[in-house]
Image 1 (cartoon, rainbow, N blue to C red):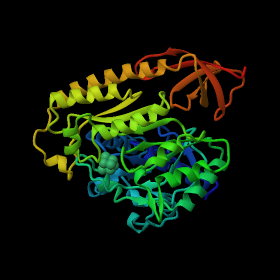
Image 2: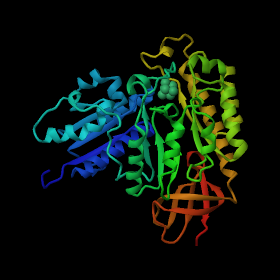
Image 3: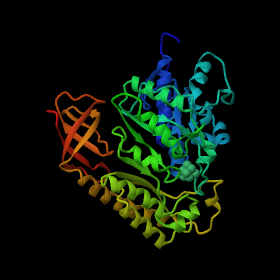
Length: 434
Ligand code: SF4
């Protein structure tokens, strides 16, 4: 590279998997001698890692691309991520975008940029395609690092565009995963998040999801492990036992999507409400405070008032501490696009508001249970007044004061009270080590 470093900026939309892939690209560019700058600052290259899961994500991705081009006239704009797969030709036709790189080739973006600055114009389709060839994350904007074990999905839920944009399910070889875990820990991370599109369906040689989880938990070191989003199918009895392991955090983001069996069937989900309840009950019998969070779609085609009421009942019954509510949005090429009884936008908005309100109350109820108890908090931020904040093992936000607290360290904190409200509700605690 030249003595003057080229500046590169990133913007990520969407899920944790996308976030991880950006982090890996940031590390790759940093190691290759580029200067990483904020998205708001002038850069020689801007990389936008897009999302296409709903209409709203499309809109946000489009706005971000326009903003990147506007703020950096004459600079290189690289668009990647799920929207790049979904609307490839449309995006390739836009003069403000220099390169459109699909998900399969995302890991090779640095080679494309290097070549460009050396005067060689590569076509992105000539880049190497490997969804697991990402750099180990060593410089992250986050305290946790994801470990990607799987990509793609074979479930074809009727509303979902993911199988089209992320492809069929593929699993990363276990030895590669363990090497990645060891390298990530060596880079100083203390919390790992197991990530993929449908990780419960991991399948490599005779290894399944539980084998991967166990192998990761058995890697020596002072760290803890979280599981990102999980489908409520595909795992067996051993999965429950693995939560006895002290390194595995007692939290699951288990995607429910609807509380109505009729809607679940139309969505072509692989479970019904009873199966979901069995899973939750089995965990909560052992650990009543086990944290479940979830995703719910409101306004799926044909969702009646009764179906919606069932979703509302379900979130209360399962005591989710957080529900990510999505208004159903038509995705081109999916089965649900052709379904009759599409729900009017105003009804979706109304239902979504009701669900959000109920979910906020559930969160308060859940957090209240921790008052007077202890959490081990991994510090993510320390403010100028000496307040540290981070998440406890149950994935609950905790703030506390202490002397000389450093980021990325574990602290035992006794919870005193609830603070904040709405999206900002959290817990205030007392450092037990003072
Ligand atoms: S399980 Fe269903 S919702 Fe999840 S990625 Fe696969 S197709 Fe989409």
